[in-house]
Amino acid sequence: MKYKHLFGPILSRRLGMSLGVDLVPAKICNLDCVYCECGRTNNKTMELATYVDPDAIIAELDDLLSGMPPHIDIITFTGSGEPTLNIGLGKIESFLREKYPQYNLGILTNSGLLTNPEVRKNLLGFDYVLPSLDAMFEESFIRVNNPVDGQKCDDIIEGIRSFAQEYKGIIWVEVFILPGVNDTPEELAAFKAFFEEVRPTRIQINSMDRPGTCSWVEAPPMERLIEIEEYFKPLPVEIISRKAKEVDFAASSQIDFEHIMNAIFRRPLTPEDLSVSYGCSINEIDAVMDRLISVGRIEKIRTGNRFFYRVTEHEKKERGI
Image (cartoon, rainbow, N blue to C red; front, side, top):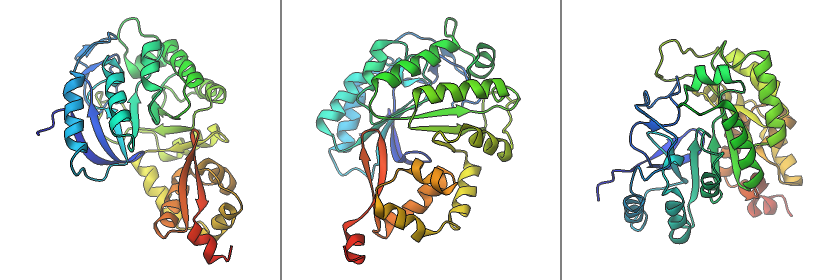
């Protein structure tokens, strides 16, 4: 079968080997963000509809997954527009849960539809939900996200707040920083207060690293992103731009492996625990942990909406336990 609505798997910076599922044609969205890599929105709407037949998507998924699929860490609902606009989202999620429960499910959303109880219900079965929040004030929201008529900044904020109260899985909130627009002291203070309230699993700071839709959009210097990261701490925060990855992987070589192993040997720890304890980014911790996992010394487990690292049985035997 030739797949029209699936793409990948591709290596995602955040999710590993990701099989993409595109739920809306290009480009149907409730926002027209100035940084969007998919281009300008030509159909700006908040209407839930069957933009792509869910049965067609289910048929493609079944064809791929029932055979000998490539390695897949996660099936990610994303694509050319806002995936929560597709009213068939819940049907597709239910199919995957019933027939292919071995796969993690994730979804990227701009959060604009999360005030709708039906949309929130459709997302409750996902393992990962990655909502965006680019502004706390209406003026910066309009400038960054260019919403459809009737969409307000408070909708985004209230939607994430409501969803966080209902959802038991992993929430990684992405904040896209535009220098001079949404990084003022007042806006950063409002971001931090909100994150202290809703307590997402992670806060991910992003910036322009590929062409967007508006030529005036610029990337802040890495020093500014690091300042913002430090400001948000001790909340679980990380920078996810490509430049940050390069910096973090280089820095991770300076981390004492055995020091971390001794800590994990005493009790399982989350990436956030280790980040705070060792004064380094979550990206750096992940880089070190990946190396330790690859040689069989530790393993990664999930409990509730958190991931923990713990030593393997092999490592315990090596230590005479």
